[in-house]
Amino acid sequence: MTTLEAREIFQILLRTYRDTLENQPSTGRGSPYQVLILTILSAQTTDLAVDKVRNPLFTRYPAAISLAQAQPEEVEEIIHSLGFFHMKARHIIGAAQALVDRFSGEVPSTIEDLLTLPGVGRKTANIVLYHAFGKNEGIAVDTHVKRLAVRIGFSDSPDQDRIERDVMEYFPKDNWGLLTDLFIAHGRAICIAKKPQCPVCPINPYCRYYHEIFLQKNT
Image 1 (spheres, rainbow, N blue to C red):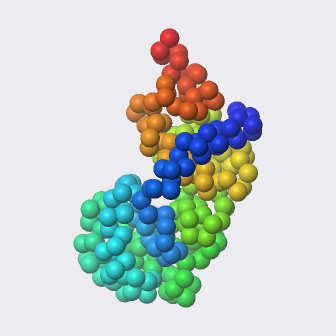
Image 2 (image 1 turned 90 degrees about the vertical axis):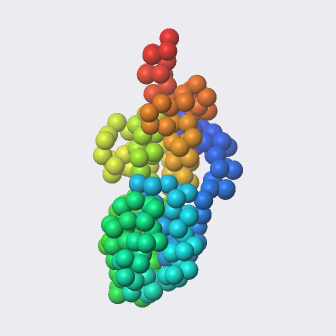
């Protein structure tokens, strides 16, 4: 994989998914507080599912101070449909309490501070920084990004931190946040886990998986 090929992949994905990103559920939109809480809730579930609890959750808890004072059972009732609701309720209440106690109720805008919040790892921190503050500090390596990075040929590592570093080397910093969203969109639409739709993939000329695995199996 060359840098020029990587840039071409970016442009193809951007043309393919521009409308998809503009019309996606509102999980990544709103105030920094809303983006943080929704991103924590989005672990191991869909954006559409999270979007359904958005209004009832923020109507009940419109700011960090109100969520910090919430009873876990009340939060669990609202987010029950998302799965892992006991843990997620604990994380978002704990994050809100940390915001109130240490950041005057505001979401911090540095990765170092975000990583001190309950329920926030590098993936969540990178998403919050990009969607809430427009900052490109890294690539959020979720299951889709991890799968695409290895299949396309950006990385050979199973380690999320290493994958993030490997992928970042191919793209300018200003593209990192948008690239994450494009990879996720492509992972959901075409490069799915069990049966990737390689024949219709717009980036298959550049994809290692397509040339080394798919074509070998189908010729």
